[in-house]
Image 1 (cartoon, helix red, strand yellow):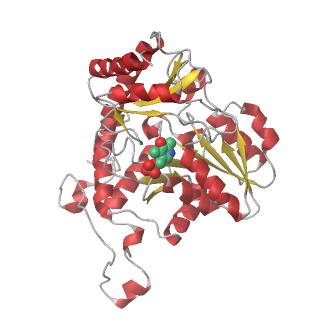
Image 2 (tube, helix red, strand yellow):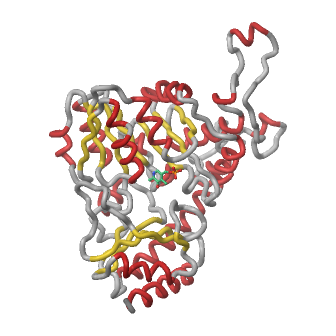
Image 3 (tube, protein in one colour):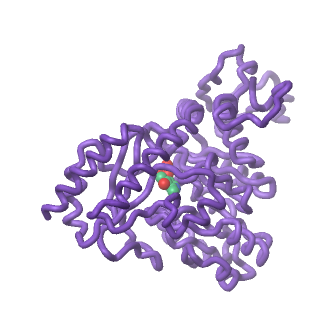
Length: 397
Ligand SMILES: *Cc1c(COP(=O)(O)O)cnc(C)c1O
């Protein structure tokens, strides 16, 4: 079975675990093997000159894709209900490639202030040099976005929840305002936290959905890759620009991302359940002043999250009050299960100190130091015991 084939006699739409188990390749395309072959390719041979001249075969050159990368692109396109998907070498490239695809000298670009920091660095360092004016706005802007829209506003860059501080923004409202004031404005959203399982940007007015496949789709901290899915109006230009910039990924990595997708819903449920348990425990902890996670009913973003998202992933922050980053270094140094490392969404738990110094508006909590936690698949009691080691250590400072 492939989910591209209708299931005869089905009485319901297949659930997410069923879909994840069967999207992408059709086993019948390759002798019935359950998984697609890993194809490594630059050159693809043509049977004769006429086929070559007319490029009259499905695959023409390695950069355009292989049966392995196509299986992954098809899977992501289906999950996002998109017109198509491109694959790029990292999550950061999944930001830079669509921006370059739609960037034009003279446009104005509106960018969320609580964005993933390297996205902001790309805007400030590269995009701003192209004759594009970058303007940042606060995640709670709501209807106020209308006042910032200009006839030349060409790109609106969104992310929800915000990086490290986890504020929600109203994605459907902001997308609608952008298109209402300028129908050609391209609305882009970094949807890495939600994954297409918990939020589908294109169903909420976004044109281009950005993913670090490095995170949950990989799930094992061993691959860097990005995916960009777009609606019918924008996919052609995105794919052409990506090809023109020489973007592609290797078959081995694409195969492993597809393999990760098969178990992603189960992994996410586990990450979510453990994260909720840890967050509730932290809320009651006397060394914690605040937990930032939109799935908590008292979180300022809860209403928007509840309305638009169908789940929450395993990344959140909390604040240790009245302690400096130097003091909180002892918290991090005392951890034995949580690793100190960047990135997230792998099977292993991680902790980092959050830094909001590059922001214009969302400076983060002022009462103490913010720690960002990635909850892995370890047993949650062990994770809480580990965090307790951290609290004991920081209490002595
Ligand atoms: C990690 C991350 C990226 C970048 O992914 P890389 O593959 O590490 O380049 C982009 N956006 C968000 C929200 C991320 O967390």
